[in-house]
Image (cartoon, rainbow, N blue to C red; front, side):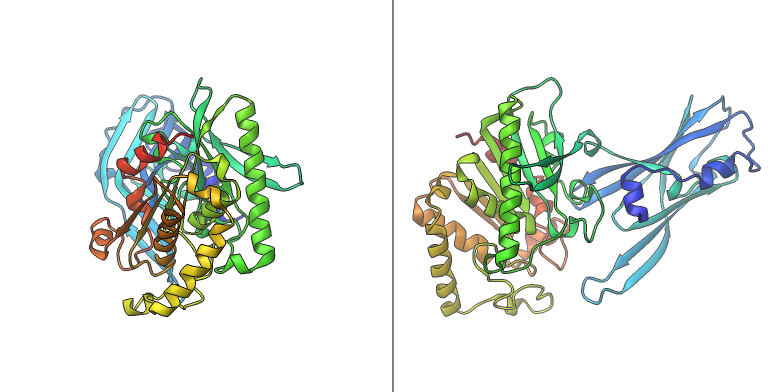
Length: 413
């Protein structure tokens, strides 16, 4: 089991906590019972906020930020070369407080996804610690409950479910995560912390349940022409459909207010879910969609064109050919027009082409969709939102946009 998965499961190492009991500590009446690294999900993903020491015994120490040093080790991998870079940086300590049985070291918030160690040192060795000693607590995410479900055909899915306390017959938002959060290349639970796709509904005060399945592997570009992968996706959709039906039957979910949202690979997966079960959904919010209806990104060498924006364009002939093919495919699913869909994507998304959003929106409108929307972000809008150079992360804008969130939750069959 790797360190990140251990952290995500809240496993505490024995190393430092065992050592402090026999160190040269100056506060002899105090013991450290537990250390928690408190995090939350920001637009760009999980973010480290503070370190909280749970203490037993009485302390009269007068501690300040000057009494501690916090060093963060980050391990990052280059997007294109796959080369690994390890850096060590001293975190800025904003505040230190000691009250009764709790010491809080509040640092300037830092992204957590690449953190591979956190080392705290000081003159009082009692508080020396490292990442292996911490339990990771993440706001809102820790309120989800993990479970498994096996459908009538034997397909098993692992899912996390949030339900508002003491609430019945709630709306349900189904979150479809991106390809970076599949288990084969990530860790258990990463789909809840990599973006705000699952948490934004709860933190913005919507009394809705949220369902988030984590998938074992990502699917390929051009999945619509890869029979075994498409069948697997459809099998997962059937399992999710049956799970949702069970939640409806149990009175937990309002059958007229089931929504789906997804980003990147999850956006493509959400599209296929709506196509397969259009009668299930009251609305969909599709972000940075990967092309799952007809191949575009890889077929025309548009995917991962990070250096030359001109290579993100196809010819008029290629556009017309692809449009006709997509129109033919969608014609087989006429009920999709009954599901309001809001597409959102960077105009110059270099990972998954925005042609999918544009064509689908136009074709569905042509087919009779009445309440669809599309938002295309310019390079300047992406930069202003803090998404630099690679304009794929539109979810950093979307899941903070109350107009979009309100629009989805207001839809009803």
